[in-house]
Image (cartoon, helix red, strand yellow):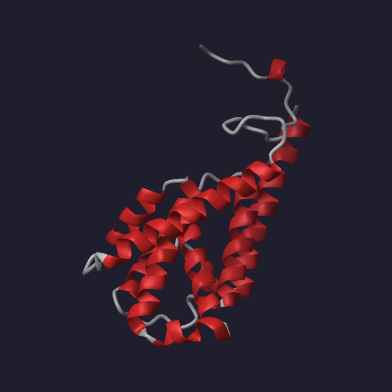
Length: 190
């Protein structure tokens, strides 16, 4: 049992340190949840390179490694940050450059990206819209409500569809993590 415990600790340390290394090496701007910075951007402040493709790669890889380590961390903030980075990357494509030219439209797209981050993470489109409203905190145009709700619903449905396409014979709420411990090794107090 001692060897199993050491392997379990080494596994967590490896992935945790890899998450730190990846974030520090690729883009230190990816550290943290990202919600305060997104709130600052939506309030009109300019944070250079915070929504770059490099930051997106660091955020996704770092979050994946951190979750693999077994750290108890929330995914809401990183999902919001990653969806805003992805939105900014899409706005850099030639097809969407006219949308990026308008500051107001860019802010609306980032608010919708925040709603998608929550909708995809929790399957809660209404929660995504409410968070987008909360993040702006200064003003929120009524015309954006439905746009944010629509994008959050699409994010939630797409997230659930991808999950269901890769799911095995277990039901949605089951834990499917591998463990070195047998059921007899664990004492449960009732």
